[in-house]
Length: 232
Image 1 (cartoon, rainbow, N blue to C red):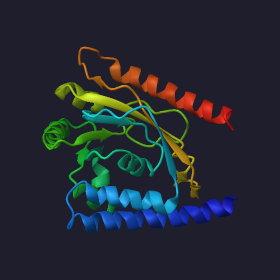
Image 2: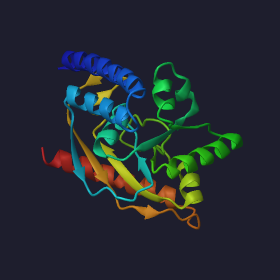
Image 3: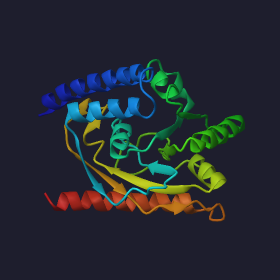
Image 4: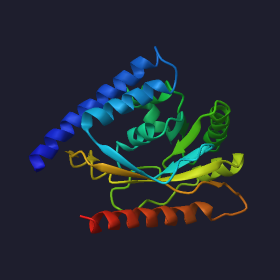
């Protein structure tokens, strides 16, 4: 089984890089968001993972906050929603050869932690993307969690949401790490659950909403794992 999972991982990784190339190519041919949507569906169809949706996506959502465990997470979100997503990611990723270009072309937003200048640029870029009816999408943990515990949420998500009083919808992804793990060279197609939680309007008068949201999302994640285990 492990050998098969490693072979699958190699195949899935080749597919992901091929999809990145397609996304870059399509940006010179098709309008946004089709290049990323098509490349994400290419990954999903050729690697055979499935999704189960729980809850409802808000029609007028302005920001998605999503837990992060796997390189599949972006593809899962892009194939789950028809909305034009503007991803917020750390600045270093925008300078990674090939991958960075796939982020710069659709005008994703870079963030440099602990930089006041970067914060001003972040807010300006966010305002621009919102004016284009795009949905700001972030992994508030800032990086992938390697366990079943979500990492502490970074303050950047709250700063953006509070500044523009955004309608925020949390999304919990369950089982993406169990599907694709770059650290262990593992891939097995599985069912990934996408849980849309109730949206809310960010309120800067509540200093704890982001921390409370972390706890809520963790509980939803734990409950979904428990239910999945109990139903086997």
